[in-house]
Amino acid sequence: MAASTTLKLPEELKERIAPLAQSAGKTPHAWMIDALEAQTALAELRKRFVEAALTSVAEYERTGKAYAAQDVRKYLLAKVSGKKPRRPRPVKR
Image 1 (cartoon, rainbow, N blue to C red):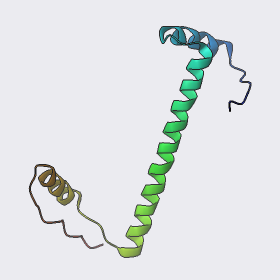
Image 2 (cartoon, one colour; image 1 turned 90 degrees about the horizontal axis):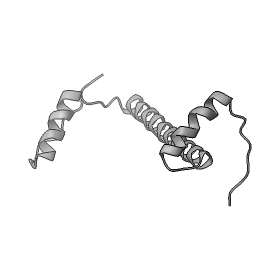
Image 3 (tube, rainbow, N blue to C red; image 1 turned 45 degrees about the vertical axis):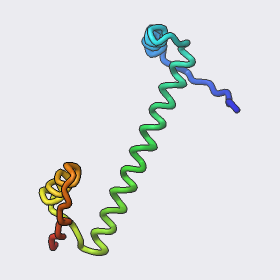
């Protein structure tokens, strides 16, 4: 169910939105809904990325296990080319 809300836009922003919405074949309202949806999706994606990074840091701090970037790159390139490479060895802290 849609909920009503009111946004007080600066006149300059409103003037900038109108032609963009028109060129997209949308009303300014529909264009703003799409813009809010896109920004919400980006913020959620960024949040998940940061959470994954923090989880990785915690795992590293717990185990001390890390891999050299060049070894991982070489492994992945071999893997995607159909080879069966050996997994990279962890490096020590």
